Length: 382
Ligand SMILES: *Cc1c(COP(=O)(O)O)cnc(C)c1O
Image (cartoon, rainbow, N blue to C red; front, side):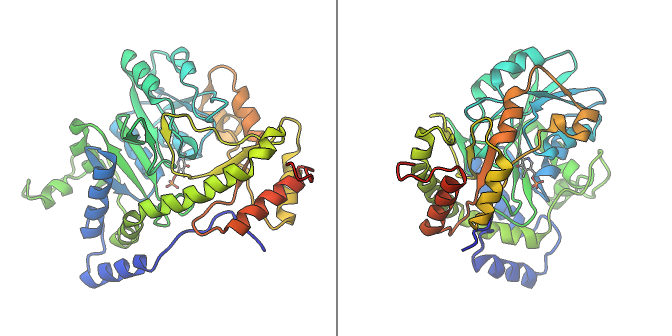
């Protein structure tokens, strides 16, 4: 039995809604399905305004435009993240400043932020890795004291919370992803959460090619004109129709992923107590969405060999993130602050295991067995 790393979840309803969109003839963005998705996101995330975008990358680019980033501005972020976190700001001439991550959650180490601030710093950019929240109370406090903005990269954090609040709704702006590798999907897709009333209108203009077309459609202005810089960041209605079906099932999707996540967590308890791996750590302040199950290998274990052995056992596991500070563009466009030894170590030791809606107990057990064998732990007590 071959177990894929990811299998996008789809029901029959996505096609039904795409048919509806096809029948009602509204194919451009901001039709009825986009409106439904946005008001669902606004309700479940308690944000001022949710705006669908064609990706999380696009939402982050909109964030950079909203911040009026100028060349030389600095944004503090982890190096252990996806390229878009940095790219969106580098496109506006900003310099990412990478700090190290925490050993437990693999999130930005909030105690390192203050020391990385200079007079060019504009924003802090926490990334909620694996849908597990960064330490937002402290990050918001540091931002407030230093007059900085907070942009949450909540690409992996749809349906996750921190002390009862939805990820993406805590900073000034938040960005979601609906890419097919995430929990709630539309192929490509994303959303910008605008958490401040005073930025809503400009966010709408930036998303609509720099025009006030949204105001025009609400009958607030007689014609729409070029108002600001902007681009085309909205998805078409077919994508929104697909997404609407997923959002309607968001609770069930999350529950099904959580059940697989918990099964792994119990199966791997013994391997962890033998010192053969480390399992994910979820702080009590976080409710997560089971986006990812990963294990950390001990120092000195050859990960490539483990991945090859898993592949032989029919398990398609993968590693994650070549840290941005050690990638060619990271060297060129960013700088690091302090030592990134946790980042470097984690990036060499992490393995992501298959996790998707519908993965069977049998398959989860096969993953466990294969990893056990790959680590040379063949006794029953592993
Ligand atoms: C997936 C991801 C993105 C990019 O999302 P897209 O929707 O593919 O643009 C950005 N940041 C993080 C942390 C991600 O995991």
